[in-house]
Image (cartoon, rainbow, N blue to C red; front, top):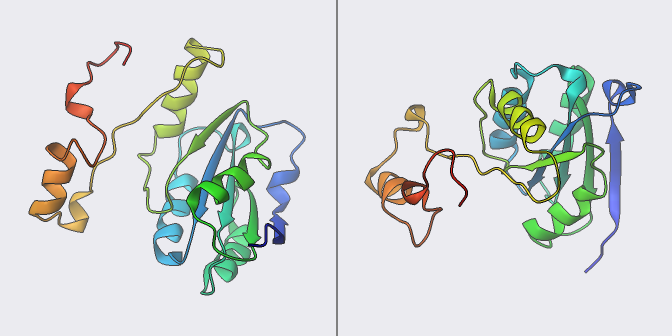
Length: 177
């Protein structure tokens, strides 16, 4: 499979002189509607726009994803860079390609369907400021928003499907996992 990056785009906000503290890395494949919601949630963050950047790697989609990224890069105030991989190789390959584009000292990897709480990046940065170094990581709870009308399976997966989803129920807040 080709590992070529077809398009590399950066918006004008990306050229700010200060380096971001956090890079938000988003691998995506054929989900422009979900990606649009994720990008919109990043625009609503309470963390200052100069403190984070958004890096999106499209893993060879043949839909409207590239056009969405081009359009979004023209209108957003967020620092945005993106790459389009020639062919689909899976989310791990897209993440690995994106890691080389990230300039922040902290990298937050999210899915293309994650709608962030408005203070999420601010809280994430606070954690890393309080726990500096390469041996710390932060795992945030992911749930299905009520506006999606979660069905019984989604609730089971979120609360009881420990074998298939992350086992949040056994974690104690403030204690090491």
